[in-house]
Image (cartoon, rainbow, N blue to C red):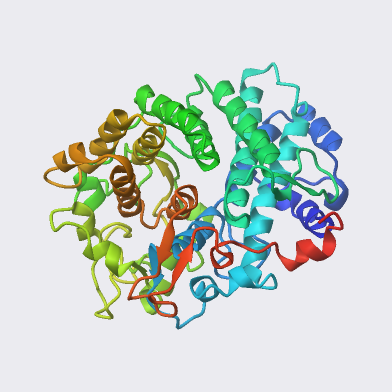
Amino acid sequence: MKTLNKLFGAALVASLLFSCNDDFLETEPTEFISSDQIGDLSEQNPELQAANIKGIYALMYQRGTGGTLRHTDFGQKSYDIYGDLLSGNMVMGGLNYGWYSNVADLTMTTDYNDTENYEAWRYYYRLIFSANLMIEQLGGNDEIPEDEQAQVYYAQAKFFRGMSYFYLMNYFTEGYAPGTQGIPYYDVVSDAQPSIEQAELYGKLTDDLKQATQLLEGFDRGTIKNEVNQDVAESYLAYAYAAMGEDDLAATHSKNVIDRGNHPIMTAAEVSGTSAPAGFNDASTPGWIWGMDITLDQGLGLVSWWGQVDVYTYSYAYVGDPKSINAELLDEMPADDVRKSQFSDVFGSGQPAPVNKFFAEGRSLGGQRNITSDYIYLRMAEMYLLNAEASAKSGDEATAKTSLKAVVELRVNDATYIDALSGQDLLDEIYVQTRRELWGEGKSYLAMKRNEATVKYPTNHLTNAGETYQYNADELTFEFPIEEVQNNPNL
């Protein structure tokens, strides 16, 4: 991690230290700026804390936050695509420009020289580095700030650290195995550290998410959903427990989010793209828990999630590399399932694109050049589906059916068939409904891992059609990048 730490330090001002008017701060040489210096600056300018946390949020959508100029390097949504492709839910509809082709054909997961491994690794460790700086600035890991607003920033930094380790553990390990080695762990800014056991690392990341959940109680972010609040933090805590097989806890925390009642499940009209606002391009949609309100000021265009996924945006999906749905997953949906109508073979290539799920306003092919469509990170249907899964696994099938039906009855005409399901049949139905509901949202890979699923690549897969992989196969697990292997002597 020595190399990564140097890179993180050099990028500090660009990503974290903004003044009140968003101009970059003039400070001492940024490669050597310390948390003490940040703390001193914070005392002189309390609004710097707000600017620092704003910088962390910006890492989630800015280009190059994975350390490259590649067109797959644009923050969290880029790695959502990585996971969806590996899970087999999403399929490359063309390989004309090469972006994501190494992910789709499983080259990157079997070669630690492949840049995609480095991008993901650096992105999440950069978030961790930034969160650690923020935590140190606010008093350290064991010192909760007394100021109420500072507590919010502290909690959000703890969330980002916990969330980042959660994704790293999913992507870079074969699945939860408590006694095996995980990944390097940092809770302070430091030089290279060794990997620690998975059980210890999950314990640390769940501690961060628990503390964030507690400290964010009562925090009101207003109508804009850019910021992490209690619902966001507890949703990821539920996801983390589910990944560990702690199903009782996953059920409890997902139910807490549901019971607070801050967000409904998206309606059939919202999901099928026939309502206003349309469900998947507008962060004001009531069923979203967390998303980014994208504006022209953020400067997103060709290199963006919308550019890679949406045929109505002028970029790769429009000009030859659409992202399609697994053909069998689509074919198996009942005719009356509103999610079936989300996809259409708009180019006549045999690759159905998400034209009624993800679409820029106006729906003109290639029409959106400067991105104003919003980024979705988390929504309420996820918590119902996770609650159904965790409840079923912990033996509470009645609750599992109730939570599952709450989603499915808004997608098909008759969901009463769920009442007759039990055992593995119930679990299988929850899993397939999760895949249908969350296509393209970056959560299918997580579901594949925690359900220890077998993936069969579909008939419309351009390179690996019909091939089958277990959830823990080398081909479905990211490699520690060569940069880390060469520069971290503790591995």
